[in-house]
Length: 274
Image (cartoon, rainbow, N blue to C red; front, top):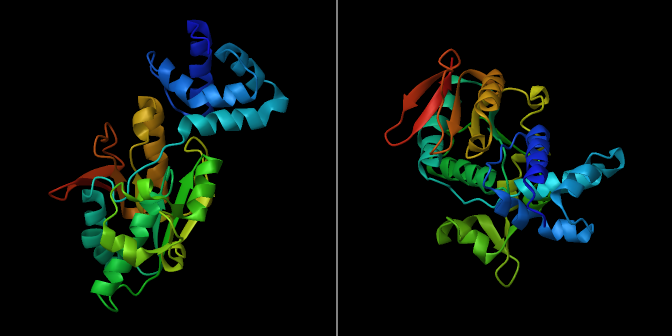
């Protein structure tokens, strides 16, 4: 694959416009590793040629495939632990007491599905430990811009390598069915409260409705500061007053004190919508 600086700059501009991801000047190796197979399939030799092909109206499918390849990431079960403990031990009991009706959670940029399925497992654990306390139903909306990731999520099948990334053996036995070999499928009772749907975080959130909790973790680090703040303001408009935003361990808010207030959970930090 060509490493011409002009070609790389053109590709960077395409990717930021398509999905908001801001590539650094030293990420050519990432582009090469993610796109080499796709480019070989389409007999494309340089990034410049790839960008020119994608700009043709007839190549919408190629454009979607490139964005898919550049945004596909496997994640962990119960990643970073604290946000999930906070959800189970603080937010579930607090929200179900203070707000009637369905408790709605948004898992934004859900990748391969570990986050929404982890949340659903916690709901089941909370129900079991507090019989009759969680009277309101829970709905989890999980979105991602990658069609291949969403298909993977809906299939809900994971191999031994994926299951080894943060899933305790007790939860594996309780919440998964073995399909033989090292492949396991998420049980129907964990899947039933989750709805997967496509969404680019640069697009409108109006169709999603209102939420009590939004998990938007480990995705904003890829965006410019301006786009990050725009997304966080639009997420605020999806939250009920007093609803909660949960970010990744290395992410924080800057200049949005009119929208959110920080809540120290010791350990962990979350943000309450004003």
